[in-house]
Length: 148
Image 1 (tube, rainbow, N blue to C red):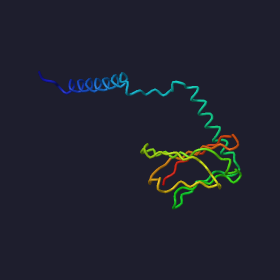
Image 2 (spheres, rainbow, N blue to C red):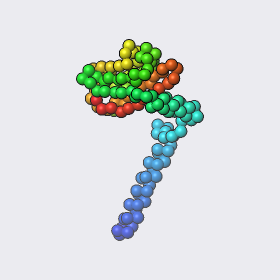
Image 3 (cartoon, rainbow, N blue to C red):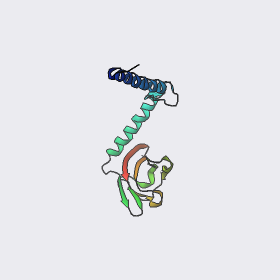
Image 4 (cartoon, one colour):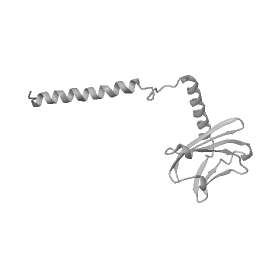
């Protein structure tokens, strides 16, 4: 039997559509590929997001802002002068988007308004820094992406 070019094009389209449908059905049935965009406890998670937003707003409303500087010894974090360093409690979280094994958290314990993250803990590349602290029972949050 001889197949002309029109029949070949139709068979190619049918094969392509079958190929795509196979992968669509396979991905929808596979438990490892769970792509739900909504969390199980959506409203509880939303309250957590709102607390983060409120903490960021508190940090932005300070008269002097938190500053981050790259220095040869590492990363220097300068807290606002209006805050008493002895009453600041919280954590500094550094996340490496390219390698989760490099992520680490540091507790904030200050004797002055500066906190130094040592150079030996930081590899060159992008870091997402998240500073969450409480001052007089009021939460504050600062987020920034830096390249070291």
